[in-house]
Image 1 (cartoon, rainbow, N blue to C red):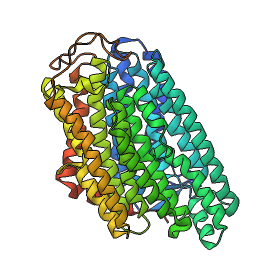
Image 2 (image 1 turned 60 degrees about the vertical axis):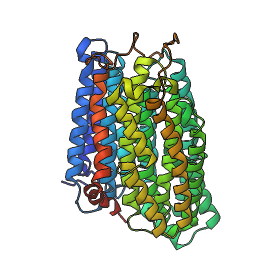
Image 3 (image 1 turned 180 degrees about the vertical axis):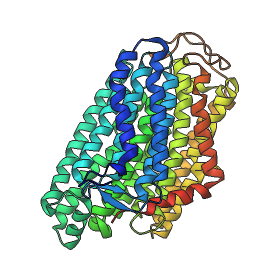
Length: 501
């Protein structure tokens, strides 16, 4: 029932996430250090995310409309990206909880993770400049807490400080750019802004506003040249947190930017497709070239994630020209969610037990831990775009969209970058299956590491390999399903083409 602008029926998934997150604040404080009660927040968060997924799925096919006084979209685009974000939150929770099993952080991590997911879900639907800023802050602030979960670790504290400084600067500049749009149009609503800009506005100010706003979105999407924070934050944070931060905020950033640019800058105002194409080339090229030189797997995956963002930008560049570009971007982001979180889940397991993410620690890993090694191998092969895995289908879709959108040159550059990326993914596989493991080292373990030797066959114990299996199974199944049977997923993701206009 609608009462004025209070359309609560339209945001049931958001209410579930918000209500559970608020309830977890006192619960996490109460169960802290109380044995098995520490796992209560994790259990409640799993239930909340599953419920949100269920209600969001039921909303697929609803009539596209704007609620809350035309400030919040209920459309196929929002539903598809909300499903991806909620699924990312669920998989991220499984990995984070496995990593901190038996530690006090397991009580606090679900709360922060839930609020990050809520911020991303809100961004996917926001039609109002004020709401965009609000949800960006909701997305960022809990992410700082996740990065600094291990407060005794200097590297994670340094990573949090860098994350905060970069985010504060980027979002402040973006907010300044948003004020330009309000000044030129007198409106906070994206569709009204689009109509006013299309009716006639100073091209210089329109382009300047877009440039400033793109800094904030580019930060979330880890686009070059706004990517500098990502490698340091990913390598400083614990591996499961790095995986979560590499996926959910990125997906939310892409969803928010796509809605923003298609509604506020219609008909390719300010030549934004050309700008996005140039950023795509810079992002994928720098990400791949720098990844070639990495000797730590988290930094390698950080630069890999930057390159993957460049591939998604290929579809974004033609989103206003090609009918299937939005569903191609959504498909690639869904595939990226599974394959990237699978890789980081394995890295988390090794980091917990070896205390390092040096590539040398992965020598012989595929033989010492065959199932975990297989999960990592499939993830890396999918990221490289090897058929019949999800990454291959995603790359075909974005390249096809670029060709259909008269940007064949961009498709050629992207294909060349995919070949470059293949090298460093295969290099990791060579370490895993073709090299002998190094001699035992006396290096000081990471603060999140569990003392003692790692035995891959160990039973389910605090932080033991068995604790990571739910994440392995879910991510590997998703990577295989999206690649082998892309049809059902594509039919679902076609809903992303439905945008409130």
